[in-house]
Length: 447
Length: 143
Ligand code: HEM
Image (tube, rainbow over all chains, first blue to last red; front, side, top):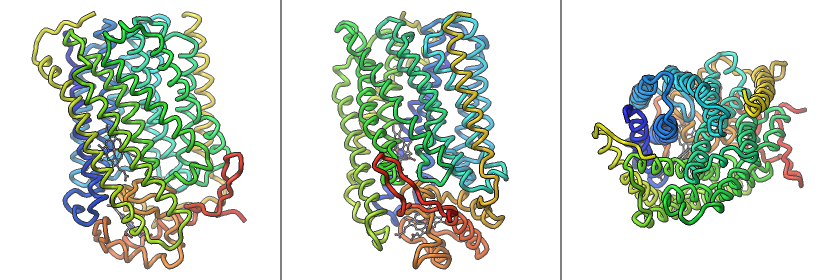
């Protein structure tokens, strides 16, 4: 392996995952001790630290995986072989810039992108370089693209677009019309998630076709239908975030119509794939298989949850409560993180030239899924209590409702520790060989 | 180019075209009259709202962080309103940080919250829930 940039990406990604989870723990401590810790670990910093860092995990892991698959598994040489490294360096410097901007209180941005907006420029440059290199290379060297090439390409392009859209508020005339401004802001976030889902779901399909050693997984009619449905959802499905904002009615109707379908198809694809595998294939790829199965399980649970609150009558009560947080963390951890961990195991076992033994990981694996389930249940419960407080009680102060959830928040924190512990163990299993390999000058990749 | 590739590009082109029209209409919407425009003072308030990360704990229309309450209609809530808001800002009560806003900055934040308040209701307690799952929300600028 001549170029170690993919290893750098995924090592940085796993580090971001670990760091980000600790920020999450600190943020959740504030729910338990509101006055006590607010000076030392202010929520105003811990929340943005947490969300930015865990989102970086998803982005860096996805990018690193795609670079790895193309160069090391498909053996396709990039048109500009130096660009991935430049891409990495730009992202790392921007990352440092973002933390500095948080530490020094230069947080002029908005939710999820709270850093000073100038830093968006290098991020955009990184994506554009990635995009140019990707399309220049794949267009020439691959005929009749399997679906994952379409998905990755789409993800990159829309990522760039929605990153720009999320900053339209910088234009004064935009800012003045509050309802439009807040609508576009949350529209862009919805589609931003849709864009990284394109990268991550593409990776899931790629892994499935590699495990099965059969490209048809990525070629069938259903698969392409899934892709176009995902794209439609990315474009028009965001508005279930904004049912309750008094925008024009047709935007709300459209969102209602579109946002129901995508996951049903993803669930179906993974499920059919899983059923079609022989016991030998499963045994040979056990860890990757298990994490994809976990992702399927979380897709299933999240479908139920999301279908329910895509219905405006239910969304009405759940919007603006921790049920939303359960949805965000349920999908970013359960689905995205599980798929990306499967990719990490796939990549590291290629690098090590030997498969991981599921036996050794079994307890951790079930702990990860179990703690996540409990973790999400506490959020759902907190959401129900808050929804009830908002709509069905009068004159009960916020602090009283919050106090009644004291033990729920303690449980949330404890299950959070369990989750961090299990992911930490998984990450260490991956990081150890990665660090060793990085200092090893000649790595051979197994076929 | 292969047949499949052409077909895919066609579908994507159609989707992107619809998407462009859709975006354009959202970006240029609300130009006619009755839309509430934030005043200069309110925008200054919004900048303070943003730079001090009020959104990490508070929501507007239910969007934001969840450690504190939603503030969409705080301005017009009975027994709350401008003085109440001002008294909260530098108080440092419970999880809320102790800010050091000047009188003028407090005015700006109040003005922002007042104009947000005038754009609609949240929670939309008078909305009508339909048996088919739809919700007719109440709009503030309706007659
Ligand atoms: C893989 C790990 C994780 C990922 C990908 C993740 C992702 C996220 C995301 C996307 C949000 C934003 C939610 C929203 O705005 O609706 C969030 C919020 C949050 N997360 Fe996590 N999270 C992870 C682990 C944790 C852990 C272990 C904890 C610790 C208990 C935690 C605590 C929190 C808290 C307290 C919030 C803020 C909720 C609020 O606004 O009140 N997270 N997380």
